[in-house]
Amino acid sequence: MTVYEIVGGVILLIVALLIIVLTLLQHTHGQGLSSAIGGGVQGANSTRLSPADQMLAKVTRIAGVIFFVVAIAACVLSSRLG
Image (cartoon, rainbow, N blue to C red; front, side, top):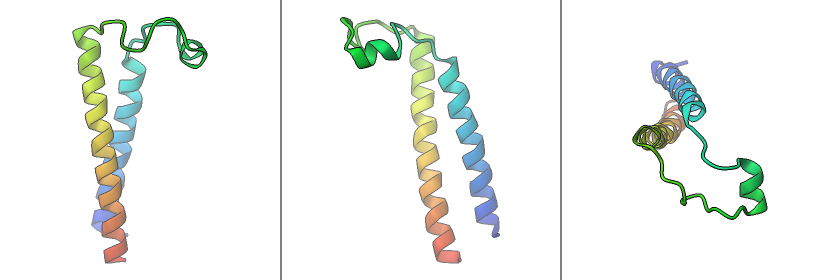
């Protein structure tokens, strides 16, 4: 294993755990999955999110982008170096 693979794996692990924690911290407004599947009366955007929930959603999106960029970079680097 090269240093790039180890560093990439560690970063992926940390970002994955961060995404899990951030997702669990988010407050759900509404009736849950049954409302989403059954087509509840209220849409997903009908409720206003608090500033803390907006910040958690934004940080979660950023962590998701970082996860995919690092995953793609790790694949490209390991294929070129290996």
